[in-house]
Length: 222
Image (cartoon, rainbow, N blue to C red; front, side, top):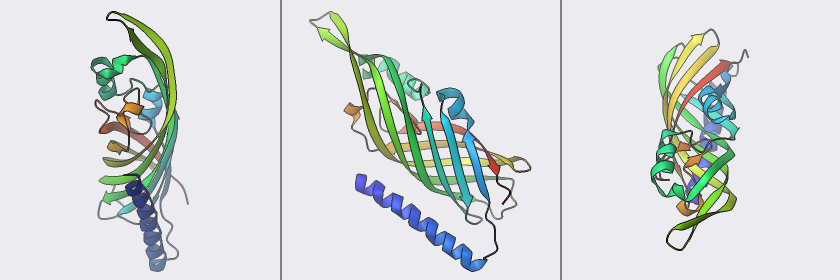
């Protein structure tokens, strides 16, 4: 599975380089649109330091890089909260989840020209997360008595993520985009205490992680 992620990562880089070369051949003087942004939904709900950069190669293709760090992600997703309340995650009490992520990939813009002020997009990313979990594991002694033992670890989680969303021009150089992202991590379920992963959102069964995002981005005056 990890070999697949590595292949997709280098395929994305190769596609980016090929697209850039073809664009240069078409017009050496074309200045491509570049954006810097931040996901407000991540910052507000997960205390996440978040930043992203995107480069429009042409009308249809955009390369995208995003990274961030969060400190209170144990129950920030409705999916993760449901899992914490109703599944084996009750084994851990006072669970704290923090960590960072980095993802890189490509967006396909469903538009006919660069002047469109509202259009949809789909994308695929190679997503990497480093998850630090800490909590009290509830141990059984006999049939009735439980006692907590402190448990902590750090887990590296790679994943393939796909996304779909809408880009909207708000004012002059200010844009926003709304997305839903599905992530499919290469994860040993028994390694994780909880159901939240930075940059991937939450899951109710540690199979598909879902995240909704609202992003603001600014077009650089280049």
